[in-house]
Image 1 (cartoon, rainbow, N blue to C red):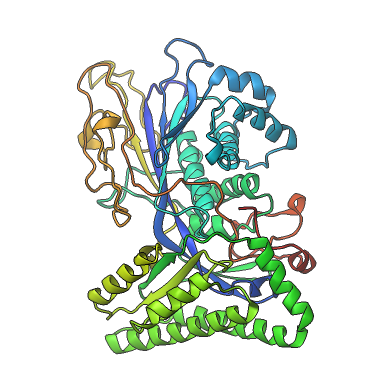
Image 2: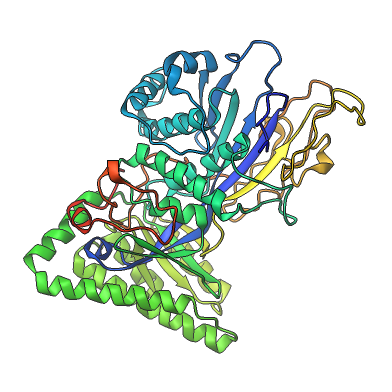
Length: 528
């Protein structure tokens, strides 16, 4: 299909935007490595990738132009001339977007050499893994087509909220849409964001998983699955079960900004289980029961305030019990305990999410809770130097907003104009045809710096230069932290599903059998 940039005759420029959510762990951290169930959910904090493809076929040949990546939140730009990419990768550049394939060792070594061309600040050297994933995904899906990708994120990095997975999912979604490998209509709804069909989401998820493997080595695939498909999932011994939350669930996420050694924490739990096998087996069994009961509760529909309050009370009790069991495992931290004490003063229940030892803490926000209570607890938590994010849990996964601008080279009724293929996105010759338009000179775009302004259309100026040689820029879609780098893909920690060469993408929610011995032996985490 020819969606955005799938034909040689298309003269662009074309822009595609994608956004993918982060994730939290509601129950089951650490115990999942020992066979218990765990529950993960998408949150409405997003990483956004905007892809602007340069015109082709107008001088300079196939090798003209460059592939650029602009990390808006850190102000860093990386650029590789197409001629350099083609010369370095050679036959390894074989764009085949419909067939996700892992990055070969030779390919990864070549990409590492390409990174040497860039001036990466020493303080940001951890960006290398994310840059490698970007180059792999871009060249594997689009080949050497010149273009510029702009990335921004609401997600704090390295906090266990799945920032690297959200980057890989949003980037894969934008690239596959641009390649015409996924089907996107004109747009749906006033916002202009569209959710892909399941088969297309499967394809995005498989590519994102390959990117995660470059960043983390042996990811579980959970983070990218949640980011792609959204909502909630239950995970147990390699099998995924989709959950549907029948009522909105709101949480306050507190980022303690305390770094942690996830591998050491996982190892510590395993050592404690070795020293006290019977006691820890009971702990893991209790966690499994909590995850199973929580899964059942979130799928119950509450029709009135009394039922909603009862449902939330049960969730709060389960969170409280889960936190107590995590303390039994030895993975709490003084910063986490500070958050627990602070929120308890306001009759709010909290638990750590992820590996513990710092990181993030979840606080359930009751539906009938007064806004003033949330304001007070947030102010007090921030006085300790923590960051707070109010989120809704279990929302949508990847969403796409395709935008096209085709330079009008003749009369509107020109019979030579390229026809629109079935299922193709609308080709707009003026800004009124666009669902939203972050178009115009970059310096004129407004930043959606408020983490709560996730609608990419709000407060975005619609501007297009009227001249025949207009300049198309990519507007700011949000503001937060760098979109990838040291975030732990499985801060749950979820267990990896076997050795890397046998790793299967978790794209089919019903086909995820894990090797239990590998689950027990691996640390269940990725490098931060």
